[in-house]
Length: 253
Image 1 (cartoon, rainbow, N blue to C red):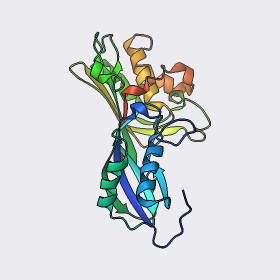
Image 2: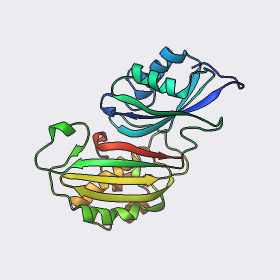
Image 3: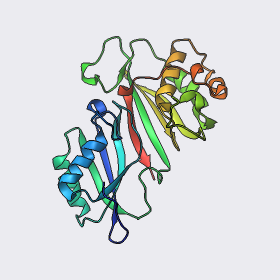
Image 4: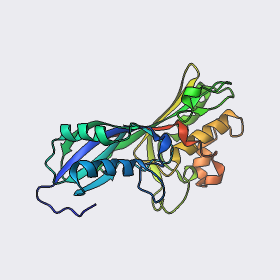
């Protein structure tokens, strides 16, 4: 987008929700359709190309967002409520703008964030649910949610989560993160894992989930998570769970 000069530039915070099933994540990519591309295309139709856009997180292909935040800097005078309505007209049906408001000039959707919460949905039944295809992991073997909830408490606290990160050039430097909460609950056949932290490494939540499933399978002991954290080695954690069950659920500023 065009470079913006200081002066009459406004900073807008937009809260959106999206179904990630047909998107290759948030961030613009070559030869792949992303949420950011859909969002920028709609903005171009409404206010032209004089804007700068920042997303709160890099979600992977197939990951959903109940709440995702975008900051947009623009000199265009459009009122927040009008921009919200116009975007909801031009965006794909799989993306909705829930709120739009002005914020301070120094606000940044990603760097101003204090914590994020993700949820991971598992349909725990012998029979798949056709209405959850792409929206929850189908896991046919019995899960003891109470056991997994107790095991998951080892994630809570400030740790080096190298063991729970897919290493690539995105992740360099400090691998410590502070997990504030992790819970595993059951409602009928739906098992939901919920985690809040000050930040997440690449694939961190999906590897946490995969490790808990290994505990359910008896391949990792229930008290084995802390030892895996201390190893600081990806090979000791469980597999990366499928993207379909993951939702960015809450962004806290």
